[in-house]
Image 1 (tube, rainbow, N blue to C red):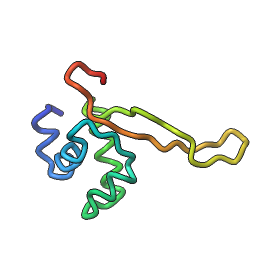
Image 2 (image 1 turned 120 degrees about the horizontal axis):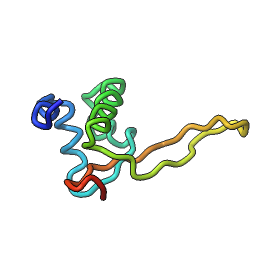
Image 3 (image 1 turned 90 degrees about the horizontal axis):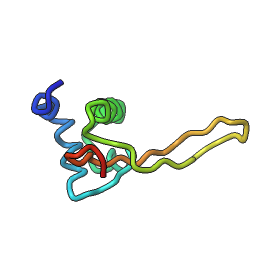
Image 4 (image 1 turned 30 degrees about the horizontal axis):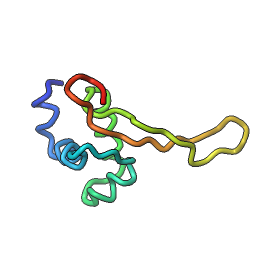
Length: 86
């Protein structure tokens, strides 16, 4: 999907606007900033922006685990710079 086409979708544009100003947010924090967007849709659009190289994971940390190797990560996302990394 081309850059302009990618951002023409209002939810994706809102996500990108939320990250302006060199901010890093978890998806939960992003959901709090965009309360009108269903959480399932938000996760899907964040994934689409990540696949397109618009967002990148800048931090991950364990938030739950049972000690047997199962762990859930909480990722912080950030806009990619024009050069591809921050």
